[in-house]
Amino acid sequence: MVKKRAVFKLVSANGRHTYWVFHSQVKGIGSQSFQIKLPKAGNRFSHKRIGVFGDSIPSGWDGYHFYLNDAYPDWTRKYLGAKPKVHNEAVPSAQIVGHRFRYVGGKYNRVVPEDLSEVLKHQRKTIKKMNLIFVQICTNDYTNGSRSGSLQNVTRHLALEINYIHKVNPRAKVYGILPISRYDVLGRSCDHIPNMYGYTFDQLRAAEARTYRRNRATVVDFNQIAPTVISWHNRDQTLQDHKIHPTAQTAQRLGYALACWLIARR
Image 1 (cartoon, rainbow, N blue to C red):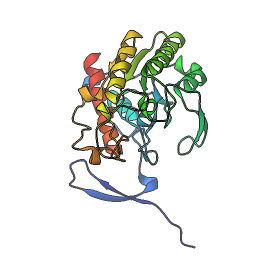
Image 2: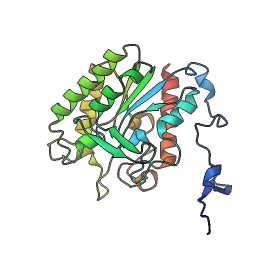
Image 3: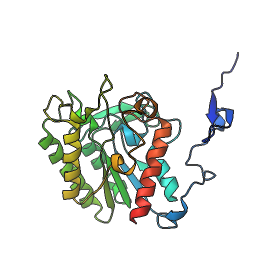
């Protein structure tokens, strides 16, 4: 019997070196030997516990499967020099409006709470231990057939859920990360395309930002802090499905941008 082994082609960041390695030889960025803390981070974040809630983007799903190793919040943690591992409770296809559970394979391999309200209730004890909490969700509520209803209904639920986090852990710093750019099957930006509920993606992002601010969450907009990472011109290279889900390399760039932004603010 011939035993099969997976082999990966790795290319250095500068493109000058290529390596072929077995799957078992590839280490995730969570490895202690992987040291990339940014000098300006100092020791301000070393003991911070980072929590993440949301959909496929922060969960590390590329539209087809989970990344080989880690999602962009894990890169953020390493760039900040935070030692505790990220509590990543983001789930692919999650919505703000809803109470669904689903089976998720990959790193989950079990039935898990899917929509934000259910995830928060099931993670109440964990939320109490978090110092920095990132929430990135809403792109699936925009999807036709989501049953999320009007924009007012979506933001009403979001406000309830952000206030639930504050109630459970009033000491945590909460960040509302706006959905990244998305494109339709024809390659058009969804910013000005109304969905079946009558609002555009741009209107959704603006309403979500207002909701975060009104409910004591700091807004993070990758279109502002990292405007060149994902664009209409590079979407075929930066998005794995060319529509919404970042490639693993793009996830690293998002994680770096978020870390730099946090360091500059604190």
